[in-house]
Image (cartoon, rainbow, N blue to C red; front, side, top):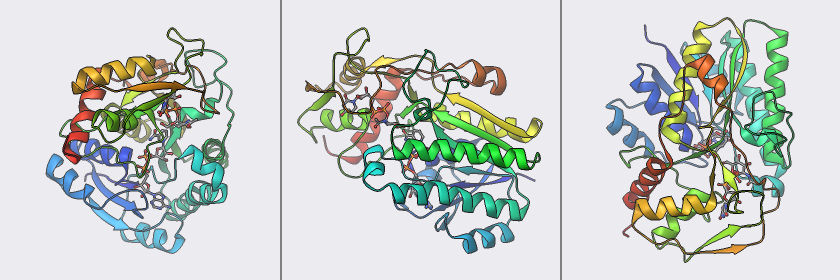
Length: 337
Ligand code: NAD
Ligand code: UD1
């Protein structure tokens, strides 16, 4: 029998790509999503990529009764938990919404899983838990800290997972710390669709290249980096999705326990390098102006990828040009440029 995986947030940016990878790896998928930041049409797109339509339930992870019904009705091999809110600025303006959605939502989900006797869990954490890097590359044992409510929700959930695992050694948990997920499925059928003004670099650059916005603001060129602009470890979302399948396979086979792994490429690119790569991929100019640093930003951040490779046998394959080309194809599929 093929395992069915419950994917919360499976119509969102990263979740939808993970659903594609899971289905292509032979898993069946049930999505639970309240559609607060995604579109139901993603299901058609996934079906046309994989030739299989994932099962979908519209609902909220904070709804304990609904969760009990879902676990009562169907047996799952594991839960992959993407659902949550993720905008750093918004989290400072609405901290309670973030603690409710992310922390309370995760507690509700884990409680329902415990009651159902399902203890295999893959969690979307973030490199934001490393705070200001003390040493690069960032290894999983780097001290953790947070500078905003969103980041703090990830820290708290990581701690809850550690407590849970200490309370019951039957749990198999993978805590995956994503660096900067970008790009889109190469088909151009699914990708990131930010509502309003994008907070993150790559979707903003794509909209400037597409003529949707006049120019990009580069947040600071006085960092201690080769060209002075911020350096990040951008990872193609399909590599990230494949990392989830590898982490799931590992969790299901290895001894029970909690494993924390970075998902990044191990290579950092500056804002100016991203702009140049995007101009090359799109054939369009990306005008920019340098402005002050964004509060809360770190200068440089990239992953140590050793643990992911040693434990999961996974490493990112796609380069910055692939990320830009696929992000551009996705942008073109949505606008007349
Ligand atoms: P996204 O907003 O595109 O996807 C999240 C999905 O969860 C959306 O479809 C949304 O409708 C759904 N959702 C939100 N709250 C819900 C709730 N209470 N009940 C049910 N569904 C709910 O975000 P994403 O970029 O795909 O991120 C997925 C996960 O990865 C999040 O937990 C995020 O914090 C984490 N993460 C993302 C990034 C990134 O750069 N995108 C980086 C690190 C970690
Ligand atoms: C941001 C979040 C982080 C979250 C991550 C998800 C902040 C402070 N951090 O990380 O918590 O986990 O997104 O992907 O918001 N930049 C510009 N102009 C822009 C946008 C960004 O110059 O319009 C620069 C930034 O200063 C940074 C780089 O581009 O140097 C990447 O920024 P971004 O895509 O927002 O990611 P992070 O800041 O790494």
